[in-house]
Length: 326
Image (tube, helix red, strand yellow):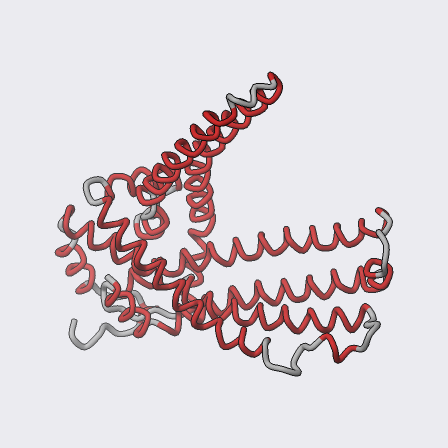
């Protein structure tokens, strides 16, 4: 699976990296522009906010509103960018398993057509995993509040033990659910299923091979995280270079503009490092999961002859001429 993912990434790096770079680059640009607007909104009051003493509540309102809007905007833009990339990877993989080329425009068209189903699938998966945890935490908090209201300090220890045991049980259950529905985004693209149907289909494919799906998926995410961290390390080292982004260079009483410039440079480095690392971490795990989906279907549903027939069929005009070996 890992070898196939690296091979696919090497052969189809242009549409994969191009799509991820376009989307995450646009999301990063939106975040930078929003950060500049937010910083400009509070720049006139920055000196008052950083002066000795507690700032007035009226002075904190613009700061809270600016960065609250920034946080919401960032979540929306990155969620949409991640959803399109998560849909684009299976689109490319569909053609990769057939040995067909695919252009950037076609990837964008087909990925955007499935993006809302991808968002719905991810939302439902997260909701299914969060609901048991939320119910447990609500019940545990209720018991703790009841014990405190009775003043029963001796009864707190058993409740804490029960809470720890419950957390140890809920954690593996959440992982089990995550693996059970991990193929759903790929199903949405490959089989044009809606979110609920994709979750059922994923559970059907994973049945009997849970440990294999868990091991391969975990290895893919761990490997992607390690490579992403290695990509970010040079940027972190640049931020630690002596004389670069040093607060001492601004004097004993820096102005708000100087502080904004300092932290703006650090944030820019952070955005760039995160963008470059995300180009790999957002592509590689879905590639592995997509190949795992194809492998499971070949083992359980005899997908091989169907793929061979599809590879030998007349290709649509946008794909260009068929490969020489077909």
